Image (tube, rainbow, N blue to C red; front, side, top):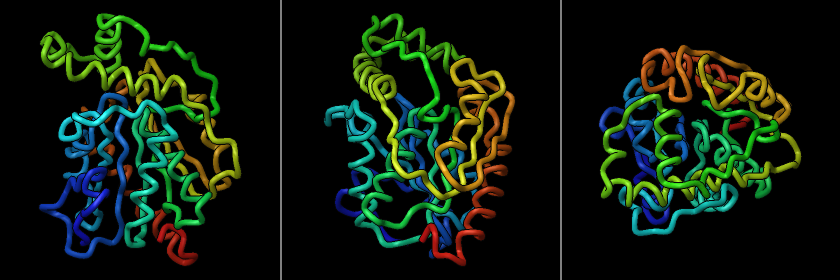
Length: 266
């Protein structure tokens, strides 16, 4: 297992270093939601097979990168991640993006395709409609602090008492505004479609992402698409980690096996 050095050390966090095998069969690169961090996926990583090297993407402006400016553009985020991946040794790879992270992962795949670099064996999309699906752009990043906090509480369906702490808010609000701007101003890449499978996961009670918009991911690839529903809202994953991990593991195993003969995903 290769150590993370240089720019990769800034951008990537190994989430299962204590339990993964010495030579993982593949890597899973996880892109977090708006306001989120790489560590959001740590509980999921603990439920995934030890044969996977699970890496979370750490966007600038949060946690140990809090002194860096927030990047409020999906394509710029994607370009920076692609620069990092271009320097990594080839390895079978899968992308997982939750909410905003699905857009970033999708754009990284297009960046890799434009640079003629190896593509992931599949894209796993969680709680996000297809990039070209119609969506209401509420420009949440321009709203008051109180409205943004209420928006986060509704989306997470949690009280989150830390959001009442002015010190916490002083750190979190710039991140939320930047990430919300990235999501609200994002314009999808309209190029040659991807060729890998796309597997979508959605909470049945998600108030922010419609099932029909999630199904439109089929327009973004010539490969197979599938949709799996789970009880819960936009953050259904939080309460159903073992169940979701099992579903993702089955998809990853199937898609990696299918990609092996052609070298796709290497």
